[in-house]
Length: 420
Image (cartoon, rainbow, N blue to C red; front, side, top):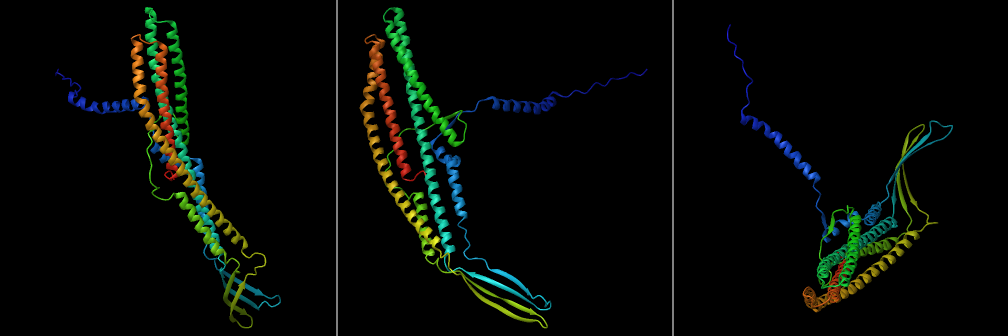
């Protein structure tokens, strides 16, 4: 019986198996990376002044509504310069004479020499420019208000940091006092007094953190974002602004254009009493025993019995007066706002610098000396707490002055038209 050879299953080389498993390894690696991205919490987003200025107008319902009003009034500006001509066909048939008829094909061309259409177009343009001025001022006010909230939130954040630092220092002082109490070198009054001040500082910290969270929530609502993970990033340092604005405020430019359009409407409405005219011209055909051709020519004149264009003229006069008064009020308000904000900014900048130079060296030196003397047992807890509270008041006053200077800077930038 012939020997039978068993052919075993061919084995895949090791290198080939490794090569085939690489795609599976890559797939698993990608899945693991995707899962890590999903479970890893997103980093907090920092909110800056530039981002607020860039996005707050795009999400403010009030600004969007004002801009839609501008577009509506701009659409009304498209008043036709001339009325459309009319083409008419008439047929006259006498009863009892079916073979006799007259056909007329005529073209009527209205002639508006009164200027009413031009006046209405100018009135619509004046309304749209005035609405654009209002929308620009509203956008500036919304941006200005959002930035004030932003910097108040930054000040609250800085106050929270000061309170947090003081709480940590008082907790350290309480630990030292408890150690001394166990050694018999301190009294329970010292520990209680320090813990009481620590609790007061914690309450101040809670209030400052609540003010910061409130600012974050308000800004998140204005920008249409989630407040979770949103942090404020910026500096309270104010800078001096000198010189006149580089260009006229856009709101004043729009209002000036509205006044010019209203005056143009006044000029055009001066001819509103001129009646409407219409010229007729056409071909006429008479059908009977024989067909005859002729022509039709005519002139139509409007009889100004009930309307003489007084309504358009009165509206143009009233709108011109209103636009002029509005422009003068805006110019006076901008001038006054610039003067007041400039004075406040210069005063607060001077006070910030004076207060820093006057208090910074003494406050730091006094606080270091008090801590060192307390650790060495040279002074009691009352003197230490007095030094800590004095240093905190100096720091809080510095933050308050910086905030007031920054708000004055914002007021001046708004008065100069930067946020328009």
